[in-house]
Image (tube, each protein chain N blue to C red):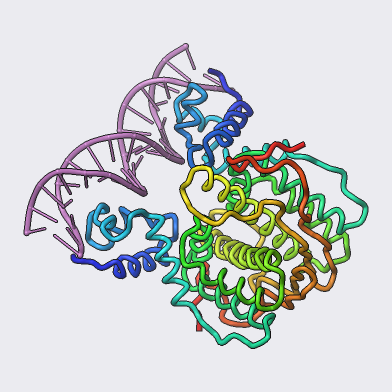
Length: 202
Length: 202
DNA sequence: ACCTGAACACCGTTCAAGT
DNA sequence: ACCTGAACACCGTTCAAGT
């Protein structure tokens, strides 16, 4: 089939969106590409590295809105871009969180948050904690939303429905005395989430 | 061998602490109990349910310090207890987070946080977001600590060492205008983390 | 009540060999 | 450069049958 690494990543994104992260196996992906699973190891040394590449591609495909000059406004936009990027693919938040946990992936949102918070005048330790906290917040909460939406559509877990209108209603974060107003974006209108926990951005 | 469900949970905690969550398989656990893997399904309908019971037991074994009367002080203690509970077993934070993500487990910390924030006079939506955010923060950050400590000891991932002195250095959370001071506990002395990402509490 | 034995339908990964 | 074929060492789960 003469696939490129980019073909593999693209197909992986399609499998992810259609069947979810749990069903994104090397064997499944190989079959989808008309290739033996072992062939994938020519392109990626491990599944972890493959997933890292998939997560990076997912983030690249997300929105990249212009950053406001003010650091607190910039933080809001970075977090919103991240949220929209992971919501565009099924299990996107879980994927990015997993890759991050393993210390892989480009981690552009983390770097940008850290740079923004540092540029705001925060001491390095506070900026590190702030960036880490914001990422946990956005990815964790968004993963919850996606997971519960899928559970609801699959009928796997019965749970009272959560409001999916936004992930940081009226929330503020104060890092070492400096305020990040609505740091993780307030309730936004936007199209509602699909029952698969996926939402097209733009 | 005539095991009880409680024997299975106890042994699972031992396996978790010795070999980590990834190596806690039904087959491994069965072997450790001198029993076929299928025997475990007499006690728990699925691995998920087993893990939920293990996570609950882990939380029960954690510290339960008295809650201050003031709601913001109580939040600090609830979060600190949670942190110490999950730090007492290898991969504890990851385990509890996983179980929580699947909507299983007693979720006592979540309920208590929600009750505390609600009692503070927060509107229900803000209390929900606050409880969820605090949990993501504590579990996410603690999981990072444990994971990176293990990675360091195993030499699996090379990464600049993070300071493990605390997980919320000088951090405050403001939910809907009401301040939760040092909500997730500041730097505490306490014994340092072991290289396996585990710390005996008390 | 608790467990065995055997099977089913899967995993990630390695590696010599092919084209 | 990309892939096959075959193997290795695993998974979770089901289910009739044993004690």
